[in-house]
Length: 71
Figure 1 (cartoon, helix red, strand yellow):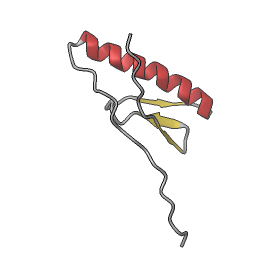
Figure 2 (figure 1 turned 30 degrees about the vertical axis):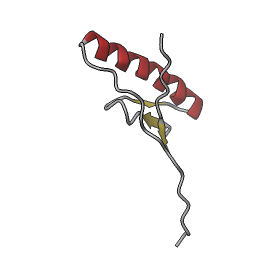
Figure 3 (figure 1 turned 90 degrees about the vertical axis):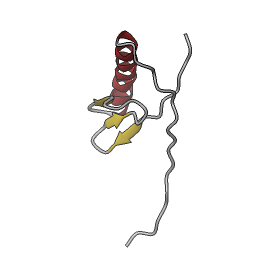
């Protein structure tokens, strides 16, 4: 099985979404919980795409922090 590395974006309410997999989201009580849940969500999402005969998007998103002066 090929290993694919998808970018996961965490949000302030301990939610995460995967930009390369539209609609793939998870919400948890802690950062650790949301990371565990999003892994499962990614696997389910990919399984669903395969079952429907749809292509699995190649991971392509990147992230970066940008610093700006506070007002």
